[in-house]
Image 1: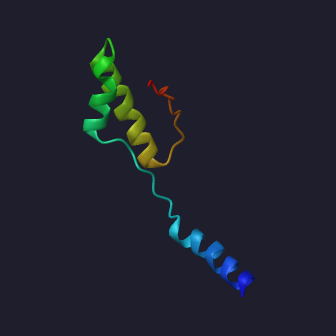
Image 2: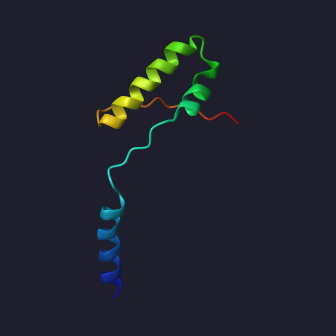
Length: 68
């Protein structure tokens, strides 16, 4: 019974995990670029990355450190 449940959940995870990628919306992009020196370049750069991500191309994701 335990193995049956495990295999069911294992195969179910494949069907639930569809190839969807969540990209940043315009508000989130503007919020990230708020503190940048050149806002327009930052916005254009992130929008290009968003379109590449939605097309399925690989993109580099910058890591923003968390400040307490």
